[in-house]
Length: 520
Image (cartoon, rainbow, N blue to C red; front, side, top):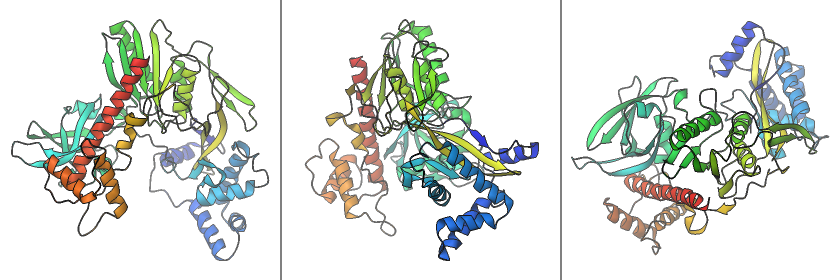
């Protein structure tokens, strides 16, 4: 969970504010930072036989005042705000040195506290299932009247994003992409499916890409921009007005003023209520949602809690309550929504767990899926600046987060009321061992272990469970798929296997949602 940004240092002048804004936009033309000088000084001190502490001390004492100020500001924040400072009272100097050298405090069981030059370097960039507004699965097959085969992405779901606005449709197969201003088309069938998302991103911010799409045997061009409006954290997976059932998915709680999860959830629910009058069953899929901003998770939980209900509390290292956060804003009572189910898995964490417990422990929902990750601590973000310089960004663990019932799930997780993804329905395993790089004669050959992973992936498909030999299994799979029977895990085999297994994966997701609907 992450609090909105805090700042450390003196009040900025207008010029300094401009410097800060430029920094936060990731402008790369700024001068080399004093942080780099600090690290170089440390490395030189170590090379000369000095300890880490001596290296930092010497660097600070002998450097420009700007570097000394950076050192002081980061250290002050760590000593005052770090949740675990009382756990290491005699080691705080060593803790600080470790933060400055390694960039994080993983050594002290706190991988979330980190110091870097930009928020992007800290990994605080929102990621969604599809920034163009579509979901897809890898595809390889014959899809044109000319009997030509392509590898690419088959569109399985479209929401209100730039792909939809540009005319994209479910069933389209994207076979390539051309970057804005370039002549060459990058065709997908020569790349592993795992690399395709990177190929689709514009190389220059706020520009566009053109997708080359096969639809009904014809080649079409669809040009899409990548802008904030397409970063949609909430989508509708299914809606049935007759049965008064609505299924939503929350991908992230990194919402901003234009795409906050709580606002979108409310908008979808209001729209459905206007048409159906009531929701008998609301399913919210939060699988693989790693969290985001605490406030977004809090406000989303508030939609389903009664006025005055506690959503979470912040506590210090000793368990003392620092702040209590109660239901805030709009809410839906049982007169609007009768039953709520939230689905989580082992990758559901942080603000997602705060949201889930905020609804569950106020007796408004049942939880399905598998046990969640277990992150019950909160980080704050501080921009470190002073004397006209922006030095870096510090993400620091400051509080424990406790549930409405007074529990801390850190390192424990949330156990579902009904396990809906175990045994034969454990669809996560369909894509666990997929090998994402095909055999290439000159540059890449599969290892024995990778061959066994390919074999295990094929065995997850119906009719191949008895296969025990890698090459035989690959040849048989190629024969059944209409692919050249080479016995080699080439790109066409990779794409087809990916597509088949992802189809099973999505079927498993649908089954899990149906199990939750049936149980509510």
